[in-house]
Image 1 (cartoon, one colour):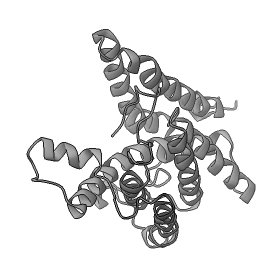
Image 2: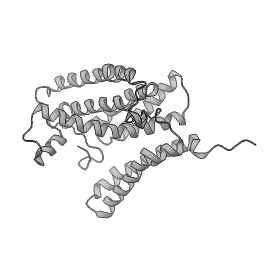
Image 3: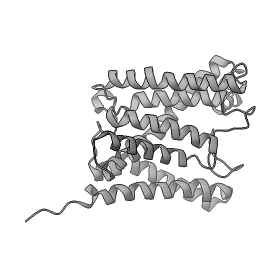
Image 4: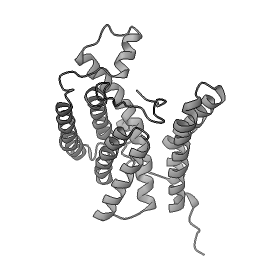
Length: 260
């Protein structure tokens, strides 16, 4: 008698994971944000957010029997850094992809006239307000933002690459080039949609998310994409999404967005 396939191994279960997590996310940024001053709404966001983080990082991986390698991580002995593809990933992501990203950002900064007057990001301003650093300088601001965005980038990449991208590959199995293009674009669309209604940021994240997913499809490595995200996020927050441009790094309803 043929053994029945576990629900958690089916395409339907992987699709359901993406839908549930996305609905919960949009509830937090679109429903809770306008009423965050009302305690029950804010409490529900913290509860749902905590459950989501625990589910995405741990429970879902156990239920679906995902491997650390396909999620871009190494073993605990290697501090969860995947080293077997680190050299290739560093070359593809940090040398090629990130170089293109940095070059594009600076070309845009030159075009918009922000290259000579970068603006401090939210994290370094917060450090100044707390009295942890005195004054602001370009170097201090860059490194403060870079550290912040590597950590924040890791969280986002775990959601979009280690979770959603991996789920999409199991909803739409295949290993040919067309499948890689489709999965990469689909991941980019979801990444961009999570940044609505900030349309400039949604466009940036769609493009960058598609390129990261394209790389991750063949060479999943969470360390390199997190560093790439950190550098890209730092430079865009300092040179592109600035007051002079009228753009910002928040998500959700205009004027009520959450973010740095």
